[in-house]
Amino acid sequence: MKTIAYYISDYGYGHATRSTAIIRELLKQNETMQVIICHSFALDFLQQSFRHEPRVTFREVAIDVGYVLKENSLEPDAKRLNNNVSYYVSEFSTKLNQEMCFMKEKNVSFVISDISPLGISSAAALNIPSLGLSNFTWYTAYEGLIEEQLLSFLHEQYKQMTYYFSLACSNEPHWGIEEHQRVGFYSRKIDDYEVQHIRKKIDPEGNSHIIYFGLGMKVDIGTLSELAIWQSPNCKFIVSSNVNVNHPNVYHIPTNAVETQYYVAAADLVLTKAGWGTVSEAVCAGVPLLITNRSSMKEDRHTIDYLVRHQLCDLIEWKELESLVVTPSLIETCRRQKVNHYKNKAMHIVEKINKKIKSK
Image (cartoon, rainbow, N blue to C red; front, top):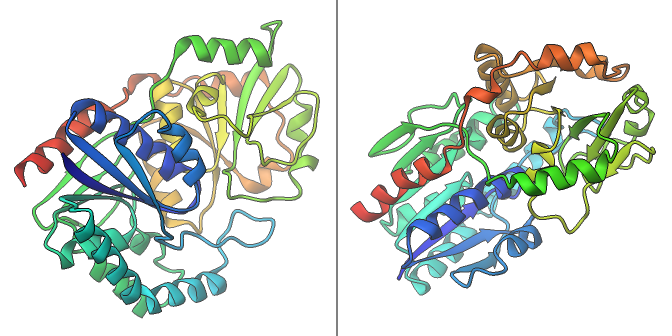
């Protein structure tokens, strides 16, 4: 039984949902593999996702900082972010020793990280092969936001990856000591029956446009309820359980929902920030995208540049969102995108990962 340690970033749910897709496929393709998930923020979600899988166990450990946003904003708070990353770096050697003890105790033979530097550094210290799987690293995400010595520290950790699989929308240095591969979009699988069931629940008459409004589970914007968008005619909206908007045409995803990709697939349009997880779920489901532009987020800029270049989204500035009303013409414009040309690459990516695991 091979033991894989899978490190999942603690920032938001996107890393957890896309890692779920990969882990499910890994277990499907390998009957003699067990996975230990190392994570903290979305641990309840991950435990629910694998509640029937005895080969998955969990370690609650905080593994990275993520972004720190300004109050009532989608923009990063550079000062607080610097402080948080500085503290993370100061504690890194202690955390490193803890992870090394864990890996030795559990006889870990391979590490996958999306995309915490902690698991990568711990694996390197023990001469265990590691694979980074992401559309970004915190090194590139923090460029222009944190001090140079902190960036240099992160660079030193990431350059220890044995392999790096660069997802669609990525614009990263050539990480990976042995190999750097480019791979595509992927997401958890879609169940068409469940998708149609959701559509019927939200729009029983079947004559409304369904809009998935996704600003992320870690975004808390108090003014959302004041947006004009909720008054859009013949529209129903799907929002996360934490979104404080109460309108007759707004449907909150249940707090205990696990397969949230079904709600993305049930929409006629996905309006979201440029988070890779939601974007990839929309692309894999063939649902048009309207993306809110965050120019200060380097990760977002790379994602948006890729999507625009490949005609996979339309853009809207945050200021425009304040007065946006969804019209049939807007939906028709977004339907001209090429999202339905892309397929879910989870199985293909895991086949490549398996070759790396077996080669070691």
